[in-house]
Image (cartoon, rainbow, N blue to C red):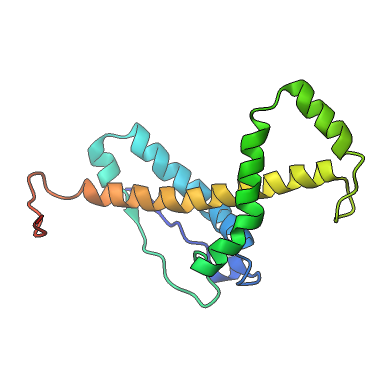
Length: 163
């Protein structure tokens, strides 16, 4: 049986605890290989092999990454939801339209030391990394629940009754 551990150590998360983006990206990078292994096991193995997959529960640590609070989610709308909206808009542009926009944006200075074009590319990349990190956490949880569900005996009756 293969054992997977999806949790980065506390020392691996030595960044500001209020910086949810960096922590989520880092957490995903730490567990990406294990999540990929579990995903591959789910896709390639027989049900019995996948249900035999072992994993360790995460343990809490003082400096661990935690999902953003409701207030912090609202604050993450800018930049991440803004970038998702921008990406959606970009997908409806032709190559020639994007070349025209890029030629204008490359000349426009940004708040950083580069051009607006480079700033937009960097922001889209950062949002991509952040969303991939969140996806890794959600997929890891999904695989664990699938594995657990495959260990429930066939015909098992739930003690929860629908009303």
